Length: 577
Image (tube, rainbow, N blue to C red):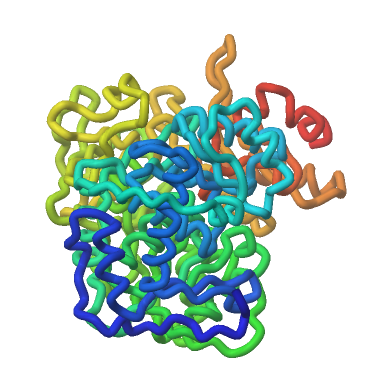
């Protein structure tokens, strides 16, 4: 691999097909007939590898034979610690041709240290029953600790796997009902479980995303992504789906994004990218950092938002910040999805930008109804409309007794459609808790319907109930991060702690100040804000920067933050505050 390669071009030079294939290997067979493919960049935006689909197919088939030669059998799981590089592509698609089931696993980002990461990773490997574990060179020195004691046919680096002699046995026929891969949930509320996605479910979602959600054009579209390939938005949205509709993808390493977010924008500008997604915090990082050089973002037709609660003010700041660079705020596309549905469930209409609904927060908390209001004397909350269900998919909002709720009434969000998971791998009981015999999935999200679009208000498990009020922790977090200049998104984690006298609401706040006076001021300011805007007493505990835990996809994980507090990990910070 050299840095002076010519990037794979935008044009595929073949008739566009929108995911109308029985399997991902069949989709790659077709994409290989054209000229599109992957471009792998480093964190500075330098091209490391140009990998057209034609070459990828050849290498994937060779890799399939090597995997089988290693002693793996059809249906075996292969855990791949997912670096955003060509080796991941070769091994993932090699599994597709060999009838194996890849399980992309996270790199050690935001896991609270080496030991915690290895423990989590080994739990994922055990949960998948993997018979092979591929460890990239980036963490090659940890291979022994990751694989020790496991019953594996292979445990080693991509280079070691790709150097094995290939088997001469025939590759198996891949069926639509076969498992394609396991997608581990990001673990925001519980230990990650493997979402089992079949070939047909994965293809159904890719088809709906490309044809109906993004409305991929016959020519000219190109994807640019820094999203992790071990998370559904990166894996399905910007690895699998573009290939199924013969799009070229420019990939950046996730681990470098926070350090140099503008490389993402530079690649969009330089390569005339048209489709790129990020959670809200990615747009915030870009807007906060200075830009060197000129950007032309006028080519960016779909600036997607997903992966977390959508913060409309962050998007407004981004649009204003890059308006002079040609960015059009109408390019923003809100969407809703989850790994249990392969990825996407709904998309907002294109070319309309972010559409919001501002409601009376007190009525929402006490009556469970989102009543529109623009009265500044009231406590208000603004939500983003996340679009209509994809074709062949349905969304319902239900009450506590399972009754279908009318528009603007908040309840549990249920979804149904051809792209739903088969279940949690090896976890029949947990599957039965969320997936009923009529094909409806309980998403665990609360929300309401408005003009046919779904509006997500938060996770049901995060809801805090105080004196008959339903309080969303996101509301308190958003208020603090929006109103207090020193705070940024993901700086605040709010949750309730059970005590003998009742529930105590706690806010862990990342504080960058070392001066005791400034720290005391931040604590009092935050407590006062919660009293004034939300009418609630909150115990504010200041913690050091970068200590609030995140999931592998960059979401704040309140459950883990609460566990850390209860185990005494924030005790020192609590005293200092």
